[in-house]
Length: 443
Image 1: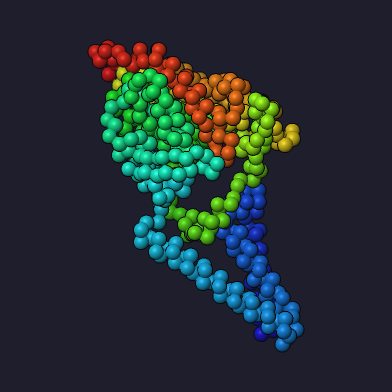
Image 2: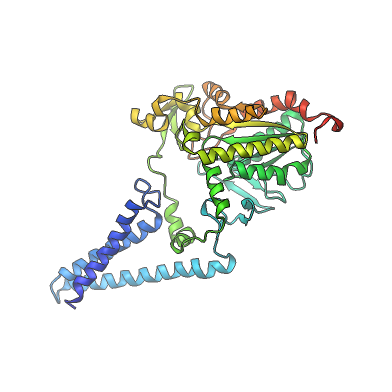
């Protein structure tokens, strides 16, 4: 027994060191500066406990009561741990796989979630005929969410629409009731039929594919394409990478971490480092929590040439397709939360402000809105940058422009701002261009 003690000590402490030190070299999670994943915390704590127990047993005098207690407790702990992990692994790699084959689609596309299916062209699609009621985001509103026969957020049976909306989660607007979304409000404001072809996690290339694959089938007068400053270039970059290599089996540990009920439970408690709330000052002088997410990066188009190039190409293809169908196109740019609410956010200190607003600026000629907007205008398409409109609304009342809870999206007042801007365009130049007689349209 004495000969095995050093070996056990080395093995147990080596396992603990692996769990806690390797992520410092290869970050893979959201805890501790974003280094540790759920599996690292779970197995890291377990390994440290076992290593401490083995150290205590090895150091206790032979035959002592303390040693017997430590040995019994360690044996019971390890037996229980092995049983729990075995049951968890049996669920993940056994029972669960009876109902779903392991995902081979890139993880960011979310193609192994319960409400989506892998797709060879789009990466993933939402399942049709979903019906769900509840609060989509902690602190958010109670919603009724449904999808049509194509998996978009619409009532079923729509086959004609005057205005087609494409975009990502800002267009789909899952955290808000359907009636509060700008897609529905534009229909109410203009008397025109609208259809929502927005889908969370989609980037510009997927949105252009959606327009071609679904949008023109509604025989619209106009298309409204909504782009988000926060992640559209990154999504464009990742989708380009995915198209180059669409079948990438997930590593065994990644599949386990993604499907394990234990690790999912740990993940529910996680937040990104430094994402605690700041204070937002309201018009009456009161303050309340506001959660920030995306930091302003005025040089993002330059930092991500692939994402920008893919976005530019997608916009050009979309413009050409709309012209070929005789359909008017409007590009709408949505800014990140911190830029709009910056004058009323009470940051922790100057360094905190600098992290979200480099050099204290909230606009720059090199940023997403300017550069992507210039692309649209160079293509001869009207572009609405909603930053000044949302900022003006926040100056009146900043409580419901963006979600102040831990969510990136627009709240009801923000949707009202977009509604006014889009409805004005649809009712004037956009509608006039789109409602030409068929013989006048270019084909």
